[in-house]
Image (cartoon, rainbow over all chains, first blue to last red; front, side, top):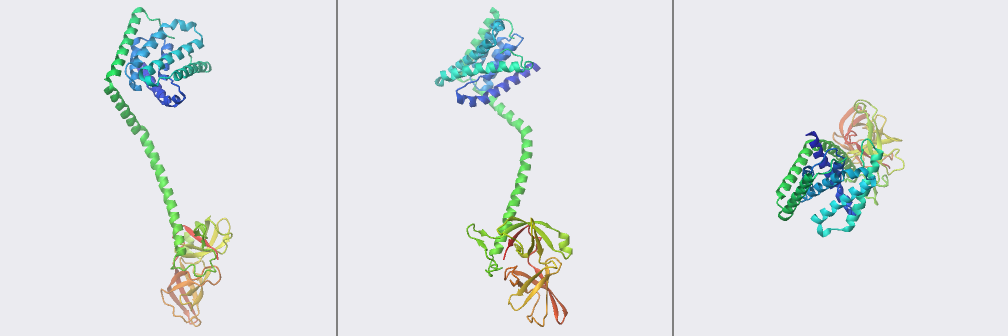
Length: 157
Length: 278
């Protein structure tokens, strides 16, 4: 129960940050799916096997709190859970950069799908490209941070 | 690190959830059926935020605002009082009743036309000993200039919104003012008819000055309540300013009479004073 509450609070918090910074960075044609990346990191770092039901429910919750159509995040969260799980062994032989690129590409794919579903008329390849670079840089930044704070952020992303 | 690779059964489960998610999305996208849930959540969110704000932040905010508004009110009140005092001083100066300008040679620069304000200095009370003022002979006070239009304030007349109260005797950081009621002070006064002149000295009592005269020399009939004005002699005080009225007449002997004159201006009634130079 305690673990569950933590997860819920974490989702609310990260989504709040996501929604807060979105209007600011969108002026620079950047879409930064922090909730999605946070969840991906959680799945990647988790020692337990995250099932499709958890991904689906978390996605539904994100749909609810972010005010989008129900099902979009549920589906995409389910897919990323599957992808991370299927590459769980490959990640072990990946370099940091490859892992960063993987998450950057997955975040860009998330943006692309979301834009196609929700914002088709304003779909922009420039936004997608800039967001792709930004997300990879963000992942690299987090990886560098983990080198400076190895105990607190002991992560290989 | 992520767990095991999904088995075939789990893959089907993943596929099912993805399919379910897609159906829900399509359903919501086309029919907007979940709008009531979203509205319910939004309403819940707003209510919760409002409730949390009301119980946690608002009490502190209200307390802070209350303190701040109180401080602002006090400050505003002080500003208004000061503005009112200055306005009263101006009114006193331009009032026709006291004919402050009758002697135009004495008050050289009554009005600075460029700034449409009076060319006198405004001073704020710094110190006055109320006990000594009410009991003893030494009636002095210190004032601090707020705005000064004069190069030197020495021997300038000091007035408040009721009339003249004294003159500056020391021009330092704070101006020392000897009040009309100090026993070392005397002011030349006259009757309205200008047939009676005398030097009124301070009595050492609050708001009372004494005019001693020889009734054999000055034959004008002085009655209680008679008003006296500055004569302008001596060059310190302007001419024809109403000073006070007679409240007591003491017959000392056939050659000497004392008139006790109650001053109109009380130095304790205001905090702001005008300093005007002859």
